[in-house]
Length: 63
Image (cartoon, rainbow, N blue to C red; front, side):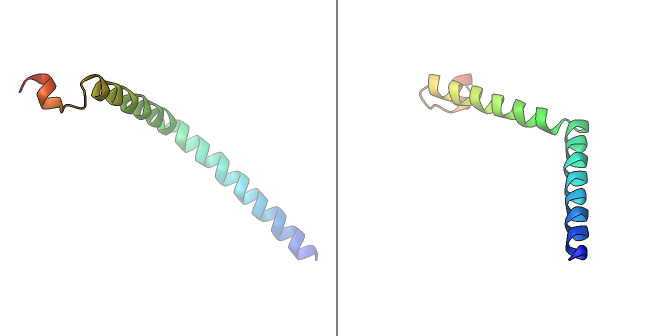
């Protein structure tokens, strides 16, 4: 029974360490910020596409 408790505590510690390291890596490479910026860009592109009646970018730019 003591082995299960030790294994559970060790597994929990490894999980917490993984989550902490993941957040540090995400912060260091600014991954969360990049995802947020990509969502904003997508939202703006959808608005632009809606304002132009669904026309392509070529039609909008006159090429």
